[in-house]
Length: 333
Image (cartoon, rainbow, N blue to C red; front, top):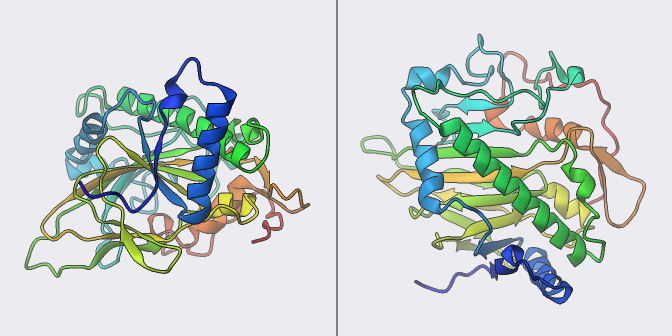
């Protein structure tokens, strides 16, 4: 296998019972350097009990469910009679560049917030699941995977804080009421005579804090280098890909880089990926490490970003993204 163009960071120390301060500082420095320059890196020897085969078996089990059953779990923007607005299924958007279907889940133990009930998008709503008879054990296994990725994200946040010259606990308040999202994605194969597309996911940056990605061996992920060239980020067995979102780039005072990335189509091949988006609580107040007075409330940040996300567009109410909270002045770029 060719040497990956992106940095490779070994997380063995996170599983060690005798990790010392020097080792953690060295790992924080290595991670910080990668996210300052490329904004992306591979993580190896990650402290998860799930291997890639298990993760993708869960995704495939969901997408093998009959279409009508998946649509019972679709977000309200796709199925008007459904009540779920943030969690659940979304189908392939025919005629768009969003050539994927997906299923999203959040935390299992978080109680819905009354202040969000009845809003256009309820960021605190409960998960929806297919009947146990259709996919036995899927919900329990997915919730376990979610919990392990949340713990890993918390450890990475501590390392990022250290890389920024802060105490390891600097971002701990992000964990309170966290609404992180685990997403199963399926890019169906494009079979002739259907027209081939160069890209099945167009260039974008992630909007939030931190993304952890399981990608399959089909490949297709490309990252925009600091020199302005698209470079391949192929599958590395046993690894996760980590990248920084727009919000963490601002929180870091511009030190960390939110990098554009895209997915190139693989003609005749389907593709699966499983990203985990770490998200703070909806009422979490976030400000730059530069200690300025500007801050945002995380829930408001997400709602403002959703205006451009096709999965949440409602053609009958495209301008209705109001919330009870008022937008606080955004962080300086």
